[in-house]
Length: 65
Image 1 (tube, rainbow, N blue to C red):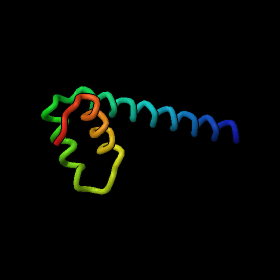
Image 2 (image 1 turned 120 degrees about the vertical axis):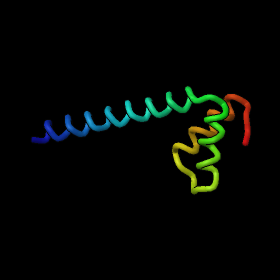
Image 3 (image 1 turned 45 degrees about the horizontal axis):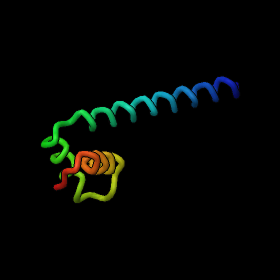
Image 4 (image 1 turned 90 degrees about the vertical axis):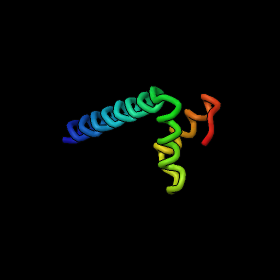
């Protein structure tokens, strides 16, 4: 039972890691205008992982709101 539960948890964590990687790849693939729009949407809200990803990508590209 414990081995089955540990495997299920490991599978869930692996799926979550794949999903995060896909989201990060999607943010990187955005055009500059779309990236600015995304960052603008999340700029007024409390800090969020998606907003932080957008801000980090903007910094890499050297663009700002």
